[in-house]
Image (cartoon, rainbow, N blue to C red; front, side):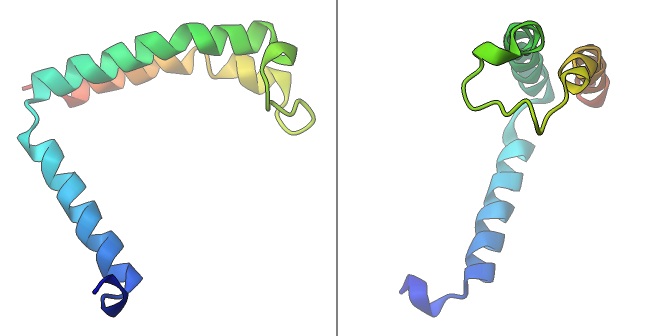
Length: 88
């Protein structure tokens, strides 16, 4: 049955359903979940900037060290964006 439905239609259908899920999540719950996620990931980003050689799979030839440090100040900005975007 799935082979009869084109791949593009199937992925569009699931994207539509995922988008509808966000409509049912109260913005307050979404706010705290996203802020918690950003706070939880921040120590890992600091560790990656301080000790990049300890991170498995990180290719230092492709990602410059300054980029690892440059994303740290962007995380509080992302938190501020989430806070403002999810206001009631």
